[in-house]
Image 1 (spheres, helix red, strand yellow):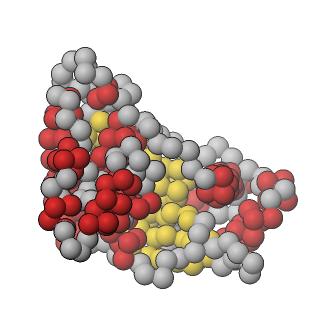
Image 2 (cartoon, rainbow, N blue to C red):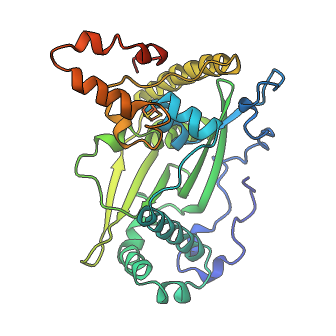
Length: 322
Ligand code: SF4
């Protein structure tokens, strides 16, 4: 939760002391979020009404990609452990975020970077462009806070965001996000990602900064054999996108409410269509019978495609057009 007093007590140690000015009046503290009981949706004995469900951008992405995956992962907590190299990449990304938070707090980071060459390379890339990253377009004093969290009550849910760094002055606000992988060649997936859409939406809804004075900026720190460079990807935000996001959120959350009501009556969330590529990389493919069903379907195509969809086991699968 935000406090209107200085967010950092060690601000004098940071070269970017201007980040630690008091919270501007355009960013009021949020009320305490409502208490949320963990996963009451998994119990058929849960009494109604249920407490509001907290939703993050990653949960919205999962829900939009496949409602059944959301059920398995977020309601039943069945996610399979990731591969060791993926776990290591995630751990390194987490360490970099902690390093950045520590540096922005004005705490020493030398020991951390000395022990980890990858962290050192990323941090060097950040320092090379830090003045550019940590200033806004106009010359007004800037306020900043890392790991800044906000919660918006919306359509019966609590939409939660955590900004890696929020920069603001009296005119504008910028949400900054660190990514420890290469900037995507095709930015379309990033534009459609719920993080890109939800983060500025929540800020515009919970502060006095309107959509036209809010920006979302990703900084990509690549790893590899060459020295990493920080690459910027800025996403313009405006009133039109804000209203489109509101419309899409209402649509998705209305569907979620309907699926949750059915789930409480024993009906599972819908799956994506059988031919969806989403199942190719999904750890629930066996649980969903997608491996067997797809092999059976392929063996009957193209000569007998209609019969393939008439197999008795397919009748048990609920499909939904997303
Ligand atoms: S295997 Fe396919 S249908 Fe099942 S959860 Fe994964 S994406 Fe959804």
